[in-house]
Structure formats: C-alpha cells, structure tokens
Image 1 (cartoon, helix red, strand yellow):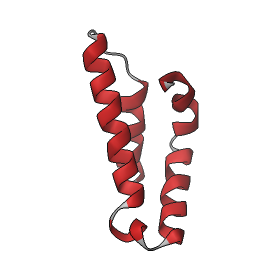
Image 2 (cartoon, one colour):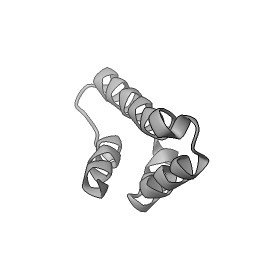
Image 3 (cartoon, one colour):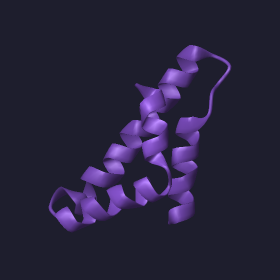
Length: 69
C-alpha cells in the first residue's frame, strides 16, 4: 500500500502545463487523501486515522503541503 500512497503524494508535487488543470488535480488529490483518512474505518477508528496520517507523512506529504498553500 505504501507504493500507492507514494504515487498519490507524488501527484501533489508535480506541476502541469495548465495552471487551472494543476489546481484541479491537486484539489482532487487532497480530497482523495481526506477520503482515505476519514471514511470507511477512519470514521470510527482513531487508530486507523492516525496510522493513515503517519503513512502519508512517511511518504513525504509534509514537504509538499507548504507548496500547496
């Protein structure tokens, strides 16, 4: 699963030729990350949410987030 999460984080760090497409892809990708963390088991299981957040941190999301703001 780590490879899949790395791919998601990598998508956030890429730039696209069109700025509007870039914003749309990054917004959608952040929505996907939020859905992975907060839905399904994450709705009721705090340990699951913390684990998924930690997995994204290990994949380097903390380095990408400041560039998105």
